[in-house]
Amino acid sequence: MLDRLCDPILVIGNPPWVTNSTIGALNDKNLPTKSNFKQLSGLDALTGKSNFDISEWMLIHLLKHLTGHHAVLAMLCKTSVARKVLHYSWAKNFSILKSSIYSIDAFKHFGVAVDACLLVIILQPNATSNECTVYSNLDAVDGMSAIGLRDGCLIADLKLYVSYDHLSGTSSLRWRSGIKHDCARVMELRRTEDGFVNKLGEHPELESTYIYPFFKSSHLANTNTASPHYVIVTQQLVGEDTAPIKKCAPKTWSYLQSHKKFFERRASTVYKNKPSFSIFGVGKYSFASWKVAISGFYKRLNFCCVGPVDGKPTILDDTCYFMPCQSRHDAVALTKLLNSESSKQFFASRVFWDTKRPITAHLLSNLNLEKLATEAGMLLTHKKGIVSVKNVSRLE
Image (cartoon, rainbow, N blue to C red; front, side, top):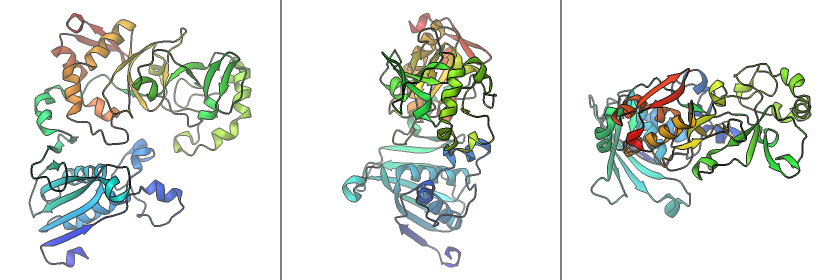
């Protein structure tokens, strides 16, 4: 229909502020045709990255038809949606001449607690802009910052980006996420004077073999040093057979079997066709005694040194990201390095704090840790992904 209109074209509106999964949960059939429209590959298409706002799909669909025309699109939407639409449009080389984001007080105007904006995109044939000016409100004349696409990455502060981009690049070190089990009522435990208690209020009698101290994002954000939580870790590798639990820890096996219905209710496809009581996001790195970790959810850059509790490695949940280290010495040194000014400024140029999970493995992997270490007079090495640090005097 848009293709039949004469230029210039103006499209304005206020599309729905809900996600496809929200509508699906309500059993509503008014959804876009099922397709991997972001062209996600493998696991990303099966997990949270495949969820999207309906408005995101609608705006991208409109821009596909408007590209090559003299047109203006002006839409009220979540700020996070505006950025995703711009990122997609820039990556696909839509003919954008100029973009602006005007922040609005969504609670004042609509009664919803979400970061929202008026997104304005001006299109023109053969235009190639990949930057967007951000304004503090609808009446602002001067922009407070600029976001843009650089080397395939969405940048939160282009000015800051220029000063610290020399630290970007591919690192040989890999950030890991914690374990995912989706069965907290059974798998997560608290220790009391009477032994362990689960979230069902039960006091199971369990062997210690598969029980580990457990940190969530809240522990890291509050910089706790001792873990009040524990978790049953049924595997050391994804897909590993869980049957040996029956022989090694019969009480634990009996406990898991008695709660099998909770595991069978897990909806995620990552557990499909896997052994009973499987978990996800687990590997040898999960059991490193020392780690440098950060919360994915909290709105600050705060890297924490995480050590063992009662001689057992602390396991992190899937809201956390971490780098496994060889020793306490290495973890303390790496924590100081990641909390350095250069590191924080690098991430500040790229992080969007209004998103649900501002810290991601992708964001963390943009920083080349070897370059950061060299600049600080340090040397990072690793053996099977477990980090060692040398020459730490400049950070002490």
